[in-house]
Image: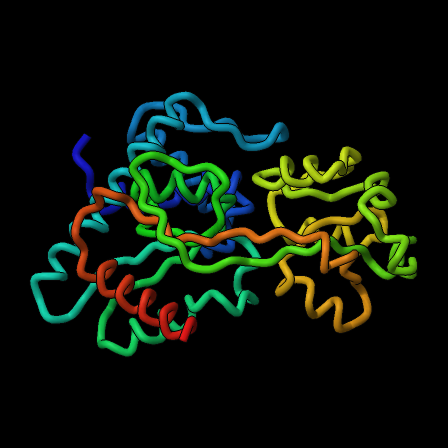
Length: 301
């Protein structure tokens, strides 16, 4: 098939539906009614002559052909972004897209100078659009490796070959309980590892289970992929769990959370800037990285 402008629109609608897992979920991003989204998907199916997805009471599910189409569409979008960036680099004004992947709940981290880097980058006249997405660590690395993200910032217990990992800073995590948990009012001398190991733990499944178990916490009663759901579980008063200090601090100040033996029970996790080792040169990405590294250096004094 020869790709026309309307085909790109239909493919972008299809990509949004796949990313959100359904028509209704994609509505807010696309700003069109689910019935219109359905018409777009039907039009794309007619154009390609294949069934792309199953939809109905059972929910949304990709067909095998749909998986092939969305993967090819994403490669096409990346190629178009690269074209726009390379052509834009010929002139004086930067254009194109800058796609950044981060972990969840990083906005409150005082060590991360991403907003300052964006301010510095945008202080130089340019028309670069900035797209920031939250992903679990493994997905974030995969997206940097595939070119879906130009760079990523996070903590990674595993590493993928072909990526550069540039150390940034360390984040401190303490063990917390809520004000309705029995340990909240326990005397300090009671808060030993031996006494706390029997408690239910809410753990982040993507990278700290091993650390929690190494401390002897075998009673992992809940696993989550993001910090906010973990915080909700801890605030229920039924679980204890490790949280970054910057995430917990407002709740500690409000008297809702208590750090349990923080001088003894803690861990440091290193954050890194991740880029593709053999990435194509891009003026926008290169200049943003210069700005980001500069503000991170300034933060260290």
